[in-house]
Length: 173
Length: 284
Image (cartoon, rainbow over all chains, first blue to last red; front, side):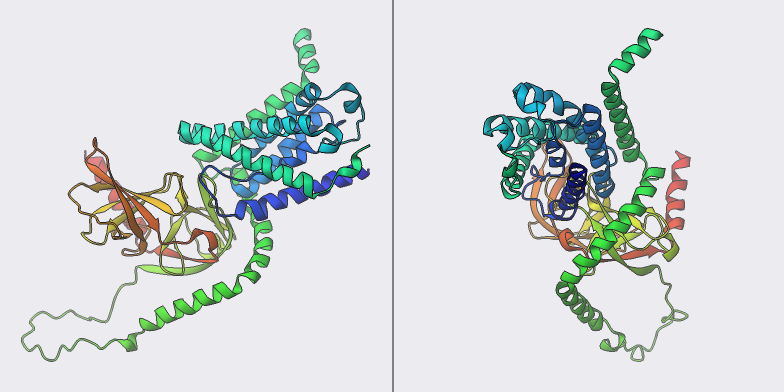
């Protein structure tokens, strides 16, 4: 129950941060659009089933889409990373860690190396698919590659900051 | 048949992902084509409500800047008061044969409505502005939007009862007729999606001689915008070797980052103009 409440608060909190703050910042460069909302999916407990992460990804993506007037764009990308999340975690983690179902992916529970690979993979897939959909509508290859890399870098920075600021160390054994 | 159902049952997570992807892609593609979908309208109302709640807060913190803008606008309007102008002295001219029937009577073509901005984006490739004024308050599709300092903002594309959506100049499909103030040669204002500060003025004939720093205004050919509104200043000139036209980079005069209010402009003769422009095409 506690878990449900915590994740509901995160859902609303990260959506609000995305809509009210990150979408309102004047862009630093055309390649850099800061995205943080999908950290909600990254932080779901290990035990969340694949179908649940996929659906939650779709819901959070579609809610964001309502505010950016792009119905389906973020929903598609977020449901894709929701689907791929268990696969990536299974590759990265030793059996014993992923068996503790109520724990969440963090530096404390996974260690620096696997956690960095985890957030890099998720961020990169999300942005690759998101910008690909955008690119299909406008078409400019340099724009596509540049935006995928620089926006991924920016998002990883934001995720690491959130990770370090919202001190989640108490999850460590 | 049994095998197919069994296969779907085994891989139901994958199929649910597939369905979600198809749903979102269909929404995305149909939305790009027409703005009048059911979902579009429904989203507009809910997101519009949340946005206007948030906007009440943001509005409070911007009061100072808004006030300064209103004062500047008041000064500009005061300068245009009728009492500031001396009427032309017609009594000196004795031999005037043709007199207009009533030189004071003029026909009003453009009407202005104020509207509060409740949603605004400038980081995407297709940017829209949401305003709290809709069909019940007299907004119609294709009305022009200008900012309080007189520079242009965009065109209304979608209207429901209490909210409407403006296609900002910062939109890949936006196209506004414009001209250079120096020699009055017309082209069209577009946006390439790169920087929110820079617009493109395309299709300027190579016979024009634009200079860096030239002013760009709206042209009299546009049916939405009144003529001679400020758009921006030329920052650089691109000469394509294979084209007969110049492309100019324009520093936009509108500040899209802190729009609080816009004025909607209604052209009372827009239907008549659109009607006559379409009629000519049947004769070819």
